[in-house]
Length: 143
Image (cartoon, rainbow, N blue to C red; front, side, top):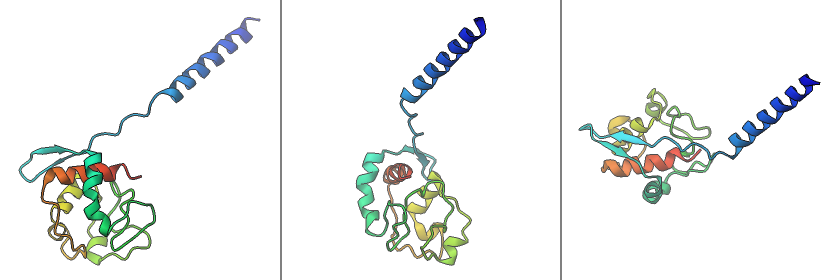
């Protein structure tokens, strides 16, 4: 009689732990922090980045599978450069060997043609590091 009671108690304990884990709020994503050329750090604000992204939205979408003049930026943070299906990249971009970490994106967005000579991205760049951090924080949420 003692074994069934022990099993029932263990089952109830496991269910309680599962329910507590399911009710817990999801962990907040890590903040996006980039550095400028001088080494100063900037923490991104996704809401401000969404507003600034309107400049990017002329050529890019954040919807999965929706390429425009430029490739979709859905899931861009952490993705290897030149790999969006259905988009025609330059050889420079495809062969860059880059992975779009927050810092690599920050360096690229400052001056795309300097970071990847031969890219077809015509945009001159986001000069303010805080703007870059904000846009990247917004992009990091698009997955």
